[in-house]
Image (cartoon, rainbow, N blue to C red; front, side):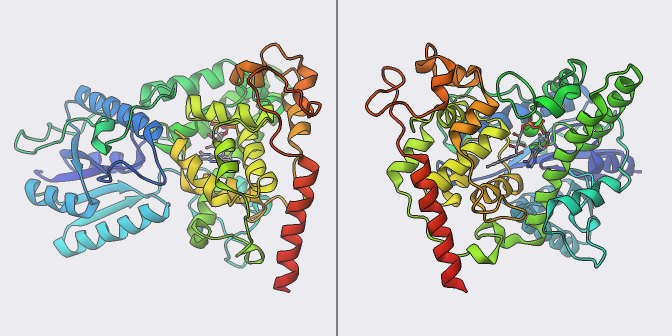
Length: 476
Ligand SMILES: Cc1cc2nc3c(=O)[nH]c(=O)nc-3n(C[C@H](O)[C@H](O)[C@H](O)COP(=O)(O)OP(=O)(O)OC[C@H]3O[C@@H](n4cnc5c(N)ncnc54)[C@H](O)[C@@H]3O)c2cc1C
């Protein structure tokens, strides 16, 4: 059998339990692994140095792992369909294998690649890989997509979950020297400045270590009680690994469940409930994938028609104070600075800061959404858009617009001793914890060099309610 096929790596940068790669390896004695770099330069409204730096590290690790199998990663740059066509012609490949990407842009590219394969008369094999259940597998009894998380998750939880496969062991001989490849990219490829953030370690090995640590250290077993507390590690920290496919969702799911069974047998009382809570978070991820798939308008517009055209009178100056973590609200500033320093932010803080931008500063959620995408290592459209629309009160199953979190109360509830705040806002290191959770007296900053709160929360809350109520009344 002399058949040659391509495996097109996308958001699946791993060799373990990679569905399309597994099928490609079974179908042909030679699989040519390829990754196609994007060709934008300098400014991209939706990405920045943090995520691209992480991607570079993941590609380097993938290339090394492929070498240990006796294979070679081929890197190209440009439009996927044009680069794949070139490679198909150069190699005489008879098929292209890849895993489905549910994102708007991924979807559009996929249809062009499928059209290319039809035109060239070669096979095109597309697989479900990055989710446990595809958007069209979780529908209401009437065959409609869900608009609300709870019934979606009940259905999702009850569906049988696909099993995980092992690691690939061979992809055949390396592609010949005649197949050219670009060198591994650095940020210079996109003409981006260096990332100044302390990012998580890239690559499949590092991701596997993170999963092991989450389970073996017992963080998984206390996830149910601890996950909302941002100080220390209370969550899995696997979102960038899911974003880039360094880990398979099937493996995460089954390993957590297996650990739960063992823990329950060892009478770890909190374990089963914690694991259930964790699995429900994985369902949130797929809920937002399904929302973006079925309601692609959310990408530019409010999910709920009632809120389309809602005015957002916040100013650029306000936005900048939020983005730089200088609002004078310690909990908000801590979240924004964690993002600046690490390219990540705890989920509770994502909610607090997103609500602060939209409900206290009245800035358009789309500005915050884009800013998060530029900074986040785990930035991905479905979850980010879902999280922003939830916080703004405009999304699927969003917090109702009149339920506005009070940042001072969130602060005392989730960071009572100020450990998280003091870690990210060092100016406040010596301020007694109770003072971090209430507005200081007028003209008396909490510490030298730290700003007074830029606004009065009750006043801005009332203003927000008035904006929403007026818009609603005008639409009726
Ligand atoms: C405004 C806002 C923006 C967000 N942007 C992103 C984003 O760009 N990329 C992203 O992966 N997540 C995003 N989230 C969801 C969530 O904050 C992160 O997934 C989580 O903080 C990642 O940390 P973890 O891996 O330790 O999560 P864990 O608590 O350990 O959860 C496990 C996994 O479940 C998924 N998950 C957990 N919570 C959510 C959620 N609310 N929505 C969707 N998936 C979830 C993630 O894949 C996560 O890795 C956003 C949330 C908000 C409120």
